[in-house]
Structures are given as structure tokens and as C-alpha cells.
Length: 611
Image 1 (tube, rainbow, N blue to C red):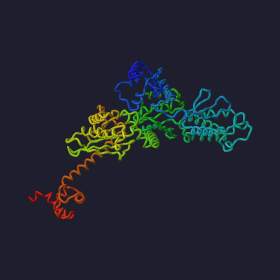
Image 2 (cartoon, helix red, strand yellow; image 1 turned 60 degrees about the horizontal axis):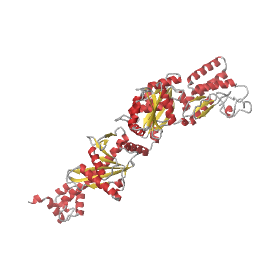
Image 3 (cartoon, rainbow, N blue to C red; image 1 turned 180 degrees about the vertical axis):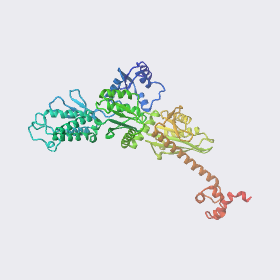
């Protein structure tokens, strides 16, 4: 579909909640979103002049069609969006790990002696499922820890088939299992009771279970059942350390989750700290690809939806840096699903603010740890390529600048950056040959014409073709450069001007058509353009100073009898400047030159004195 057809289809949508799926020409879903009013949200993508960020511009440029699914409430839209994102894994959505990275704990309730096992996903098979949790290793450790705390078996024996058939295993002898393989006591009823206690731990009712066991221990002690009371005491202690020792259990035991988000240039990071009664129980980290210009609110909305909507055990409080559009609806949905109130809070000061900073620092350090300098540079080049209208990052960039003092010594410089790094062996200098008066635009036209005519002629020094030209200057400089290339038939090399502010610092990029492209919202891109502009200016100024100095020295020392290049060099090396040479007396000159040559230099600069 054309952009106009897409715009018309979006304008025909109703003002009701739903989910939309953007698809490319192959029919692949590349983005899934939700909206309270589908018409308003979807039509924004296809309006002329919309100020989209880089990621959205790229996504919209690839949309060939879209589908919508209408729902009755915002709750349904939240749930459906999350489900579709996990199913389609769209390229332009923020994506956490897939279901294989988030295991569940399964309890096969249909047998006399049920066991806990680790599975990749929940099925509709009548079993109980808990999770999803963190990694597979941590989840397996959590199962072992809970079973050890409640002295449940973790061996491979099957009950009741193997009861009384063999001696108890090592776990019973070291006190990790109460020996349910032995006939008699403990009974099947006691086994079921322990399983129910484990279920309560995995369901998030950790504190209530502990309180009940403490009450039972007190009753046993009062009834002088000291052995039972001691066993309950040991079980309470074992349960109380679960949240502090097992990261995956921390997500169950925590009453507060603190979320820190860091949007890096190449990747984004999310860190969640699980807090119980002010104590840090555990931490989870997630790093995922995302555009550097993605807002923190959008990242929070995407991450928290994928993290919480499949969970049934939730904290009472979720602490974030800022609210997002649907945060109230999201909190209400979580409260409805877990059976208790879930609040989303944004702290301004105090302990929670300090914990929020800690979570952010954890997210940033993890992102920076796994992001290489090469990846950062490639991402910056991709951003620059998108601004220039390229389909991929520019490999070779050439930048040009003109330098002169009035009409004297007009020169130009060409610097080359390959994959974001200067390639100094390909730097070139040009002396302006056709002008007798200063004209930056004519000088730029001359330089580019000479450079690309030699490219077309197969000159080995100019054989490489750039992917992008960066001209020091604004709209007219860029337009002049484009005209020079077009006259040579080179119409497919993008050109951007590098604009400076009143303080002669890089401000923005400018197209030949006068469109200003802001780069300050991307610090890495802003820094890269600044480096290129400083380098081409430095190279031009250096050449201009060398040429101007050489011409100055030649005009004042040339023609003096007995003064050749070696004696010129000796004079400049000793006196450091032409002014010092002019002011030197005969004795000082004679110390450097033969007497006749020294007399010639002295007479040359003191002609008026001899009149």
C-alpha cells in the first residue's frame, strides 16, 4: 500500500481501544502496539511532517500494511499486546528474552506424591505452574532450596511405588530429607502438607506461612512437644533465608521491586532490585537492543508489561523513575490479576530514591560492560546514514573545508573517515587555482570538480568513492557541492553541511535543500560530527598557515645577494621570526652569515637608514 492509502485506512479506524500490527512487504510483523483510540494513534504514523524519532521513521518507511484487533477495554489491549509481541518477536519492539529464557516450576497435582519440576512453558494440563522465573540454573536451585527447607525428597525414587524397598538415600542421613521412602511416619498426609507449604512459598505467601509455622511452634512448645517445636523452628529458619539466598525466590518474597532503566547508544538495560522490609533480597538484569532515542517511559512500559503480565506473584509496590501513559491502568490490571493492590510509585527523595539510583547504576554498568567501542561507532554511523537517507551506515566519508586570508593563499582540505576513524593516508590538500578574489562557494565548486573528475578518470590517488560528503558550512555550501557533483553526473552521493553556532561550535547538519537536521539529541553522533568538522578545519588551517608563511618568507628574503635556501633557513632558525631578522644589527647577522651576506641582509632592511 502507498503512504496515502495507509493514511486513509488509518483515518477510517474507529475511536476505540485495540491493538495494531505493522507489517512489511513480506507480511512479517515488524511492530505491535496498543491504543486507547486506534484512529488517533495509528494515523499519527502516516501524517506528513510528523516529528518521529529515528527508530519510528525507519519502521514507518518499511510498513506495507497494517492490521488491527479491536478489544473492549484497555486491560484486554495490554494483555493482547504482550501476547502478540511474544508470539511475533517484532523487530521494532523492545524485546526481553523469549519463553525459553524464563522457565516455570510445575507441580503434577494428579498423583499421590506430587513433585516440583522445571519446564520451559506453562501448559493447560491440569498441573500447577509457578513463575516465570529467572534463569534455568537459578530456578533449579530454588526448587532444591525449598525442598531442602521443608525436607522434601529430591531423589529419583517414585512414591508410593518405592516406599520401603530400599534404605534411605544420603539426603536423609545428612538431614536434608525426612525419609518419605520409609514405611509409616512421615505419612502421605504430612507429605501433602509440606507440598502445600512449598506451594505457598512459590505463590508469594512466604510471610503468612512463616507466621503460621511460628504459631504452630509456640503451640507445640506449650504442649511440651519439644522435638516437634525444634523441628518447626529449624524449618522456619530455613524458610526465612530462602529469599536472602536465592535470587529467583527473591522475586516471590519481595514486597517492593525497584526498576532502573539505562538507554545506551547500542543497547538498553533494565535492572530490578527485589526488596523485603528494606532489605535487598536479589537483583535481576536484562540487556536488550533498542534505539538510543527511545524514551525511558516507553522502555518502562514495554519492559514491565513483558515482565509482569505472565506472573501471578507480584510485589505490593513497583518503584520507577517516571510514570507512563498507561501506568494507572497497568497497576489496576496487575492488582486484579494477583488478588492484592499493586502500586506504582515515583520517589522524589529518601531511601527509595537511593535504591532507584542503585538500580540505574546496575543497568548502566551491565550495558557498558558488554557494549564494545566498535558497536558504539557502528550505531552512530547507522544514525548518520539514516539522516543522510542511506539504507546502511556510511563506510567512507569525506569532508571538505576552505581556508584563506582575504584573496591570498586560498586553499582547501579533504579529510577521510573510514568506519568512523580518520584515514590520514587519504587526506588531500588543494591550492585554489582559478580565483583572484575570495569566494568560498566557487572555491568549493573548483575543489570538488577537480577531485571527482580525477575519480572518473581513474586517478589512483582519488579512486575511492565516498558514501557521504560532509561540507564545512550551511545550506549554500551543501547546495554548491551538490551542483558540482551533479554536473559530473554523480547524483547519488548524499551531501550534508556541518553548521556551526555563533561560538564556532558544531550545531547541526544541513541538507542542500535547506532542511536542518538536529544532532544534539544524540550525544555520540553530535561528538562524531564535531570531531570531523574540527579535523577538516585543522587540516585546512595548517595548510593555509604553511603556505602563507612560506610566501611571506619568500617575498622578504628572496632577491638578497648571497642568500639562498640554506641561509634563509639558518636565519629563521636563529632569529625565529622575520621581525627579529629585520631588527638585527650587522654584528648579530655576521654571527650567522659570512660578512658579505650579512651586509646584504642588513642593507636590504635598512635602505631608508642609508638615504
